[in-house]
Length: 178
Image (cartoon, rainbow, N blue to C red; front, side, top):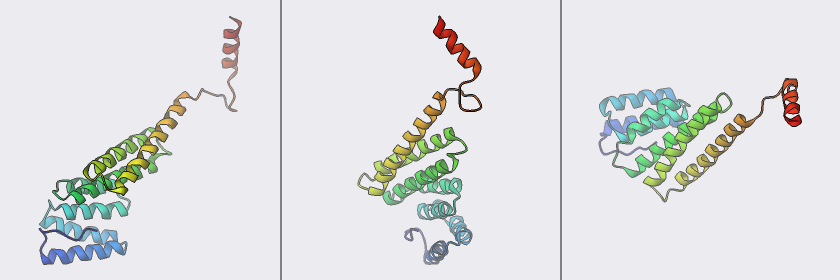
């Protein structure tokens, strides 16, 4: 978690440290409650919004994490902006992995979103190796999903045993005879 922030007072700094301690101990629900207290005092804090997004991300609550990472984007701090963009990209990437078996098209769409945010992170900080790596990995994932979607559409219909049905065989024979 990011522990700095000029807008935070000493008491708030102690709460941020407590939230980090709880986060490190994987007590995410408690860490979220502390973050919510901080956000009541300073709802526009890029640092607190980013940290809250990171807690939700680690807890596997990706849609909630995206909301807070997005709030953190209204910052002048290039590091927070880059990391928030990476956080959003990571959320979409994980959601894409989760949905891959159930819905290939949705998984592809989510991987497109991930790639878009990773590209934005690279534009913010072109020297960041993690941003470049995530961008590259998500590009390949997106392309692999696109190929699989194309292959799924091009697969010819088959009978019960994986062979062409009798009607298809007759139709093929009729075309050959013509």
